[in-house]
Image 1 (tube, helix red, strand yellow):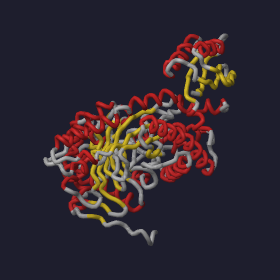
Image 2 (image 1 turned 180 degrees about the vertical axis):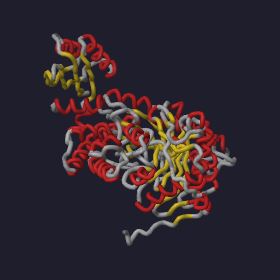
Image 3 (image 1 turned 30 degrees about the vertical axis):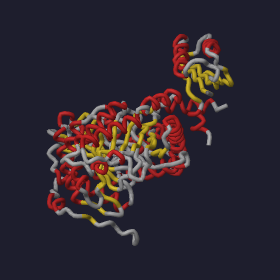
Image 4 (image 1 turned 90 degrees about the vertical axis):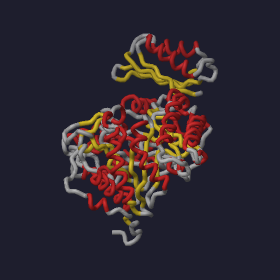
Length: 452
Length: 89
């Protein structure tokens, strides 16, 4: 029989250390839904999603109950809508977003991702329509998440798209100002976006993916934190080893849930995403894990090194636990969704510059950061450009999910609700960057040799 | 299905009797059990086989929880798979 202590350990992780499966995400290809007629395309999208995902939520709940582990979100990701809508006549893709929203509501999922375009090298007519539709689409839907990939290590950075995304973020903030800019929490700008990410808001079902598949994202900062408390003051070798062992256990849980879901739904298993995803609840914070390593506050000197260790050890421990690892796989540092990050940012100890440095060693980027509402769009574009450069040069995924808080200033806090948490408005540099962003064009792809 | 019953709460007379009676009434066979008192708390884990139980798993979970409430302890019933996944390579 199983060791009773092992059983108690698992129960304790679930009941007291916030261990959960963060998401089961069903990826659905919509490539067969294209049509010249926009309404007919929208109809096909709705019909296909509902047909494929009708049992997703119920199956997730069954697994949750049988295994006794919470599965917080059930989600859907779809083919980037710019590809599906490319051949549609009509000026904008908002009706396609509405179809996604209706389908998500019908299936009972928490979010649907894929109102997306991949424009790292250039934009098609459809890509342009999609980007222009984002602010209205996000302000008229509840469940739809949007992402745009503006750069890659092989293609460089599309600075025209970077400029457009600065504008899209500002407009989205304005159109959803009555909900504190909630639309911006559902909009991600990527470099090196991955095709099988189960996490929102950046999930989409890439073109190399099968017809339908199941991807699972695990969580567990609370469990890692608890494990590190027991080795207080010991060398980093011990820290790394402890994180690895814990990540292994967490990921095994994700693998089990993924297999069960895949089998019960009759859909192939895609990947497990080995991410440490925090929530605003006390005891479920990545920042507190870093602080447990001996930092007084997340954001002080040493934070980047601590995060690098954590991120790497999570991957090393998780890789052996799962048949297929993918997605973003690393520690997330979303400010508003992490109790410790909120505290560090509110006290002024965690700055945007430190966050940027941290994104060089973890997934994903400047995430869920509120900035003053009067920040101009070129400054937002320039933040995106900086993040893209880090991703491009370091051959990793980076992203920006930033919320211009309309009518708010540094020192204010905006409430986004639920797992999205609350975000202190953080100060930015005041130097202007309009001319830099107005140049447009492309930043060429970097060298892959002579690395120093 | 092989499942784990975990029982946690203030110690008192009749907890094991209550748990075992409820399991027997529902045709659930006990394969193994381990029980101890940890810092005044009654803790017990049992490995059970639910193959002959006529009820859906969720209903059985509910009955165990209800039985626990009657004697003031928390009872959970979970598939064994989750523990195997986490603790066996």
